[in-house]
Image 1 (tube, rainbow, N blue to C red):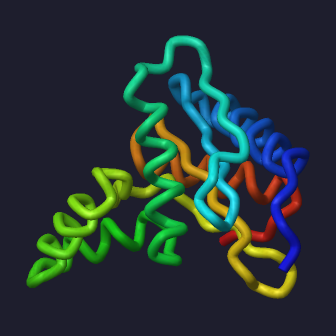
Image 2 (tube, rainbow, N blue to C red):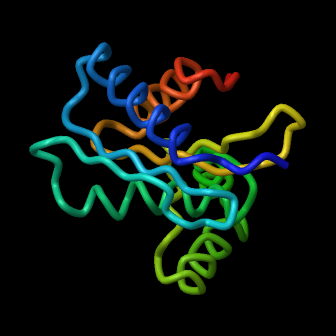
Image 3 (cartoon, helix red, strand yellow):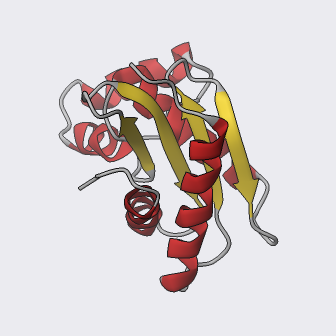
Length: 144
């Protein structure tokens, strides 16, 4: 497994913010975490509400912790049954650091191993996810 470099993390952020500008989104925050959940890089645009910083981090962190994009966590929550209880218990265990909304996207290396995650917050969750994926693709990662 190839570790995620600071240069790669900064490129992902640069391209994600550029994608948000192309989409004409409001100010966003972008957090990139390594495979251990450690913050590798973070940038916030001027005018971003301060809690969005924690949200972008939590989208990435929750994705890494469960090995799925944060949109999948949201889908699981909406399925009902015991799933809302699971998400509630998960957030109790991790001090609310798992946001079950789109915007947290896993980063895989060429062998398919998870090497990190990007989290975006500031726009509608679906737009956060779109610009995260567009940013990853523009930075050289193949994400669908």
